[in-house]
Length: 115
Length: 110
Image 1 (cartoon, helix red, strand yellow):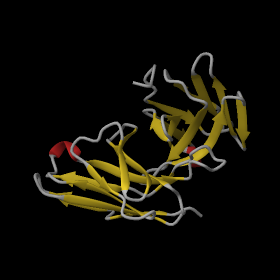
Image 2: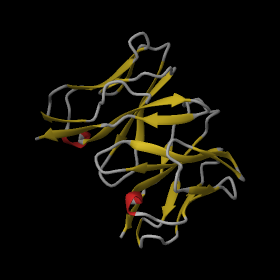
Image 3: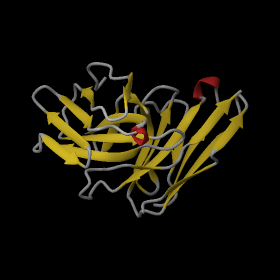
C-alpha cells in the first residue's frame, strides 16, 4: 500500500513566524507535490518536484518555499507565515511513468492555523 | 483558469438513489481523474478515464468522458451512506501536474 506521511498533523503558528511542514513517502515515486485546501474548496498546487534536489513552482507559489533533499522527503516552508496561509496542506506522490496515469497518493494533511 | 463551469456544489440524496456529478473544463487533457475525499483525510483516486475510453465502470461507479465537449461525469448507482464524501475531478496537464476542480459534497441520507 502506498504511504505518504505528513508531520505535524496540525500546527498553530504566529504571524511572521517560520513554519516547516514535512512529508515522507515510501512509494519510491519520483514526483512529489504540495497542495493547499481552503475550507469548502478544491486543492491548489503550491510546489512540486520530480527529482531530488530540484523543485518547481506550482500555481500559487508566492509565500512558500519547497525543499526536496531526497527522493523520500519533501518539505514546505513558510518563511514569514501570514493569516492568509491558514489552510489544510496536503502532500502527495506519484509515479508519472506508471500505468495509472499520474495517480496521486495523498497524505492525511496538516491543518495549519496562523494567528 | 482551466475550468469552465464552477462545479462546487452540494448534493443530498436518499440511500438507494442514483446520482451524477459533472465536471466541465477548458484545457486540453487526455485523462480525467475522479478523487474522493472523506472528512479529515486526503483525497484518494476512485476512477480514472482516458480519452479513448468514453466510459469506464468500477463497481457502482461509472465515469464518462467527452473530449469534444470537454466534460466528464461520475455516476454512482444505488448510493449508500458510505458514499458520503466530497468528490473531485482532476486533469493532467503540463509536465505531470494535476489540477483539481472545486468538488461536489455528496450527502447520502438513510
